[in-house]
Image (cartoon, rainbow, N blue to C red; front, side):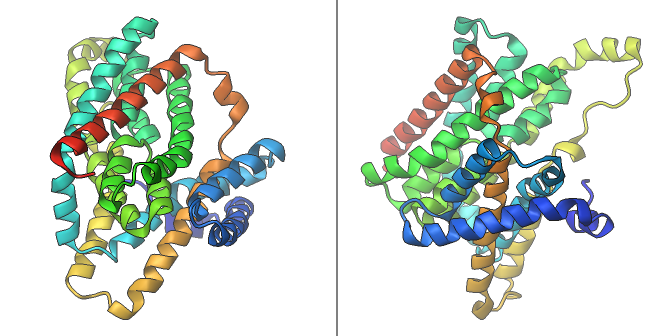
Length: 345
């Protein structure tokens, strides 16, 4: 299990300070601008500000630890904080409602990655990485399956940068399309939760649309993220026979670890939701907790924007980007079609 973020901070706070401070200051500006432009919202503005600062001002390396910390741990804290405002009944109901759409979009993602990947001449491991990243939870899913399929760093970087590119596009485009299609809060939340890759981008798009859409999208996305466990297990069993002999011959240490890939913050989200359900969270403090969660979300998304190197993303090449685009469009369209069929738009 990962070392708790609080413990990391207590042991070595100084390296994180510059990057955290930069993320917080840009987040406060994003919230101020979002107040005057509510249709865009603080989360989207935070990402855009982060990208602009990263690519125009290029903060030096002393900012990197704090930015990376905010992009990972602060995001997890924000999701946990959202759990205090949602009962277990809401979480279970939403999760079950979204399973049919999630199953269709995941199947579509893997089929599209395989068929389009073969057409474009993208090799098998990169197909898997882009398919898993689009189907489940972006960079986290890619990182989870990388040690299982033994892909090299170059393929992993290609896949993550390609997925991240379409995350940014989705955060900016989905709310606009949702309003143009006059989608309900639930319909948009389900669309965002099943068709956008990373949790951060789902949260940004959802809360940019509305609070209700953001809450719904977050639960749908967390339900979808847990599916990395069975997918990782299937991949592990699929490569086990081939890898067993290679690992024995090379003497490599390590192997598949369920504890390493499990998204533990989802467990704490459920614990927070259980505390809310049991009445341990006073009604009077719930609005303050939700506002804190929204602020933490903006901080995390701003930090993620500060990590986006547009030049590096442009250098990944055309074919993986075309593959990522094709899979992403297939997933987004399939999610809308399923909702149209079941009357949930």
